Structures are given as C-alpha cells and as structure tokens.
Length: 348
Image (tube, rainbow, N blue to C red; front, top):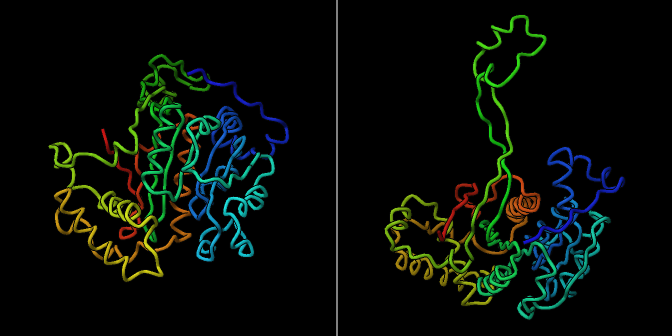
C-alpha cells in the first residue's frame, strides 16, 4: 500500500504542538496531522478517546452515535452538557470537543453504525469503536481488514474495561540500545587527555532506530480461540482472569442487547452469575479463576475507568499513527481487583 504524503506543519501548528513535537518528533506530528479518524460511540470511553486524539493534533475526526443522550450518560460523558439530555449524543458532544482544538476538523454523524456499508470506512485511516456489542465490532473489524484500515475497539463495564486492536500488519521503528567498546569504531574525544586510556574505558552505549513489523488477528479470531488446545490449556492457569471476565460481559451484551444495568441490578446479577458458571465450564477453568466478588463491580460506566482505558487506547492510536514503538498486541484489560492493566496476546 502506497503511503500518502505527510501534511506540512504551519507556523501556528508548530506553536500549538511545540511540546508534542519535542516529545515524539516532527515526523510523528506530521503523520498525526495527516490522519483521518472515526470514533463510534460517544459515551464516556468515546469521549476520552476523542478528546485525547483531538488534543494530539490529528487532521480530522468524525464522531458517530445514533443514540440519544441520557441522564446516566452525564456521569461519564463530559463532552455533552447536561442540558442536552434527549438530543443525539454525537451532536451534543460536538461543540465542546471542537473547543478542545479548533485546528482539527470535527463532524458529527447521527446514523447507526450498523447501517454503514463497507465503503463508508474507506474515508478513514483509523476506526475506533467503543461501547458496541461484539457482533457490531466484529462486523466493522472485518470491513477494516478488507480495506487495510487500522481498527480499535473498547468498552467500560463498571470498574472493568478493555481495548482491542487489529492493525493487520504494522511496521514501526523502535529504539534499541547496543553496548559497544569505547574504542571500537569510535574516535576518542579530543578532550580526552590520554587516547590510549580512552580505548580501555568500559563499554559504551549506542542507540539505534530499528525497523520492525508485527502481525495481528481479527476480533473474531481472538474471541474464538480453542482453549482446549495444548498451547492454550497450559496458559489458562497463569493468565489474569480479565479476559474471561470480558467473555462473560460480551455474552451478556449479546443476550440482553446492553451492558449490565444498575436499575436492573438484581436480575442482571443472576444472569452474570449464570454466565460465570457457563464460561468456567466452557473453558474448563479452575472454579476460582473468575472471582465472584467482581460481578457486582460490572455495572454502569465509571468516568475514572473510562479515563484509564481511554488514555491507554488513545496513546496506542498515537503510537500506531506515528509508527513509533511497539503497540499492544492485542488486548488491554483493566482488572479492578488488582487495580492494574494487563496486555494479553490472544488468537495466534
């Protein structure tokens, strides 16, 4: 695939993005200024991701959501003012998002993501799907694979959250430090009083930028691994429970058409408990692999968790666009019981 020309940075943009250019370099900022992004789903996680990437200085962003803003959304959806309840989520979030960075072109799309045909996604370099069930995310992921477009997905369930990426095949550069003898291929500095002594100095370090490549799998493949196979059966016992908690939640969404609801807590807890037992049986997990105490923590969308997952997801998008450093491959999962994030590579 032929890479498109990079954007030029104007004097005003150089001033606006001075700190970032110092942080990740002019070439990386040019790549950001050339990028076109879609963020689908404008609840708390979508708000965090959109805000982070607009501040980073991308070229353009389309925010998409066909749902109406609810009172519950106001807990985590900081881009939509409370007086916009009842209006379209994307439209309600547009003004505040644009205020974050007037240099970025931002548009709101009020159509249903499920109604979009494959050609729609060809307008973007990166597609980010938040707060959608796995069948919708997988459908969009498959479109993106066909079009060679970078794909990200994520969601928040109470104190738990996740993100996933499918970059198909991604080339990047990474710094590597190599130790070399001070006198090996290097001239002693002029201010060294004794050149012979300089050659006897301990090892020195040399930093080089090394080109690397990484391959990814689709969301479908990652979620439908055969955990009974020898390679995965051995891995299950030492894995963090977060991936299997995600399986419970995605199955809940498939059955109920939504995430666990605070207003239906009693009934939804029964279903979560049943799904926990089902997942333990399906994957032949140890009985204590998925702690029961995590189930009451999976309701609503909490802004602190959206900030954590949205921060990580946004940073990964920046890394991918700039082609700098190794991205996560392929799940990031936030475990509330341990208050930590874990990266799992699944589906290979």
